[in-house]
Image (cartoon, rainbow, N blue to C red; front, side, top):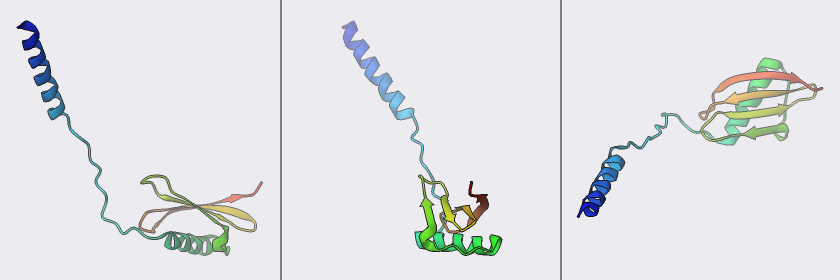
Length: 100
């Protein structure tokens, strides 16, 4: 009889524990998601405007991991450039790095 009561109490305890635990949910911001071409073209335009160097679309590396910003690497003649772009195509930052 004691074992039966223990089992019932354990089952009820686990039921309460599971029902009271919360499940986190991720809210997606209201933003337009753009194509890779838009990300590349925006990055090329940023480099041309900020550093006055023309970079061809063949000389671009595009990286994305999870829900983070796009990381775009553009390879120019004298230097390479790193540009971070949001999912909706806005430039976050851009930097120039010299070849070694």
